[in-house]
Image (cartoon, rainbow, N blue to C red; front, top):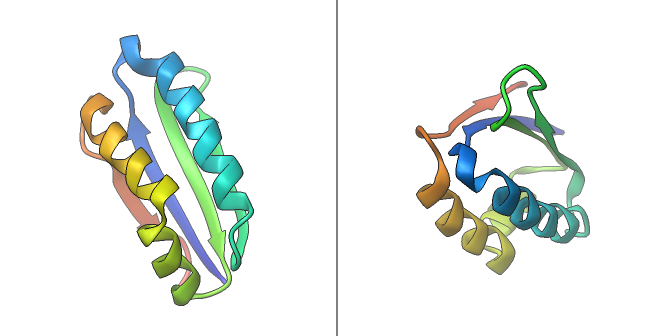
Length: 93
């Protein structure tokens, strides 16, 4: 199992649209083969600060996800509404 965490800070005025688009991404990704879990969390003391916590069966599942239409569309959108670059961390080896 591979666990990833992606930290994102969204521009305040984009928060609601971001949540709507992220919900579509979550639904599609959770149905992918090889996805164990895929969830978005918001820091309650810092609105607009999000963590995406992902669990995958293997690298091949991540590769398929990264090439999926729902992910590439979300990524293109998110690049324009982030207040700063996203940070990704691999939580296990």
